[in-house]
Length: 519
Image (cartoon, rainbow, N blue to C red; front, side, top):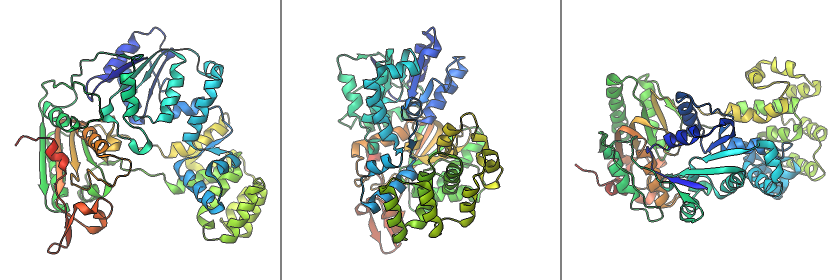
């Protein structure tokens, strides 16, 4: 196994292309990364270089795990469904994992753990499924948690050569147990070959490299490495403004200047908290300025309900999906809850559950009638409420398509490489823009000592990632006055209430002083 540890903008993708070009059979190459954004960036880069790597062998670990999952009969729960089963488990006073097994379902984390254990004891299963891997390339290794790293290690045993690309300074998912320890241990492992790299940053201007380096070098739990300047010019600007309106107006005015001079310039507006960008969103809307908001995109619950309905009408897991569908209406019905618990404990029967649902009017009677009519696929897709799903379902791969439906309807909006994009700092990982605005640079927001598993070092890495997205100019913005409803969501003790303005006053993030900005 080989390891390439390198900072942002230093040409890791270019290195991947060179590694691939040295291979004779591209079908025997597997490239895995963490985010869809990184995969799309890699695929675009391969296409531009006329390298015939497709989404069949350049894929997120999530999708690859689904591909090699040996328990195809189990339904893999999405986040909404996990919350619902956790509700039932609590109400019924049963173990969540036991409930999942009873209902023929599994979480993604459980699926990875069980698949990894299975292929360790059944290595021929994986060999028969994926064939020979000449070269396994794992990008963004620092983003994977221990369970995911265990699966990667199992995959590496089936590859003739494995190369890990990573940067511990960009490890920002501690809330899902992805910490720097995994990559640091790999770096210090004498059995792993550390590849040499020029570590020249071509993505960021020198001034951005300078302030990012000043910040991240304060962290103690990291691998010390070079991150060289390339001579690229740019700007880093810091402003502290008093009110939310002043801050929002500043950002919008700057964007208007940018777009007047460079219509195709890409812009990112980033923050650690969603409320800090609320004024900017409202201002862009009022001026009819087009933008893409990638902030915390949630699944459309009405669409998810339609997916559950289609699975009830046409799928195998009818009882499970009926449990999902009645969840909202059964919460306050103690008698119905008790009856559902009894049904589950005896081995859940769909007809008995449907009878209970009908008697307690837990779903609309017209849908109950539709269930009893047993419509065909054509009849179901012919109904107006389900027509939007018709393009995703095929009679040939029907059951597999049903499983994928909730994933398909929750696909993220694409990043606009010529427009304005608003998102969390976490979502910016793997992306770049000409102009980056970091808003909410306030003590108590970032860093926020109350952020659970996210240590101060982790939040420093988060800011490092956000700032290093800038290709031309980085704007850092701090706001003094905040409403109480927002301050209550962060580290409130870092703010003081001002009786004159009737607002809470914040101070500039200590991270700003760590940047050592030059006047």
